[in-house]
Image (cartoon, rainbow, N blue to C red; front, top):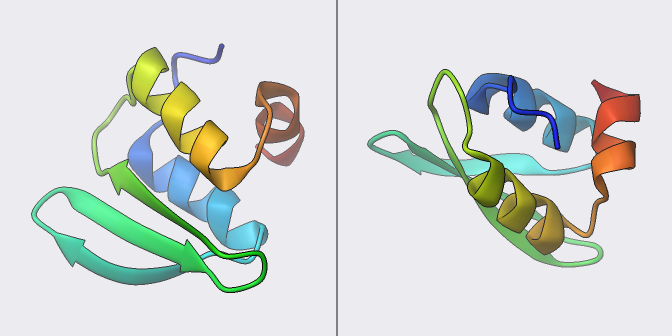
Length: 71
């Protein structure tokens, strides 16, 4: 599990997969994808915690390997 990914870097990777930034509330960026529908919340932190990253990847239907390929 990569532990050195920032929230902004994760948002850029998700945007390459078709997610768009829907809104932001405080330090949380909400992204969504229409087809297939998915909604994820990414914290805008310098380093995303491993458990949080795992949950975001699960909600987006991604694997760690896919994330590393797109990085």
